[in-house]
Image (cartoon, rainbow, N blue to C red; front, side):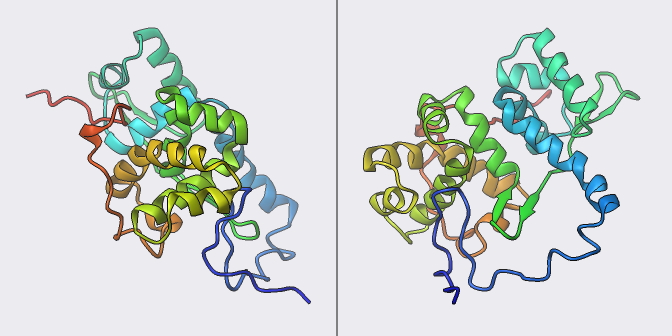
Length: 236
């Protein structure tokens, strides 16, 4: 007999147990080859982002602060002009960024992506992508991803949210996701920018934190060394 997992427990692979996992999501209609083919590009674009944290950082910036111009992206993220346009072109080609050439400078916008795998379950939202992109500017996140992978980073992000909502301790997060206590302390703190900015700008933030999205008491970003995804400078 299959045991029902405790609701809300973090899994080491990045998933989250659910009390009543769905049993009807896979059927003849959803498994039809034409349906899978239609969904394939969306999955492929997420894989592309998860393979390139620097590209993901540009995506998240446009997602949160768009419409923005390429020069604003360049200045906001400290990129060279050639790198900025290379990344923007790639994101446009992937269908992740929309480019309006009717204005000068051109304006870039993003439809926030969300990917939910109900049977694992794994959730990918802009907040998760931001957490992944932080490895470009934060050595603790870079170390964690290299050592444990993306799935466990998602688990750590969920644990960090629960911690700052007062639902768990850093030591418990480490135990839940099977990392050392010192590593849990470092990654929980390092993920604050993703939580803080995501809470304000990710339309799917409560998909990952349906129980605590409005209960987190987060440190002030200005007191942190890691630069989050900051808004573009005001032209005025």
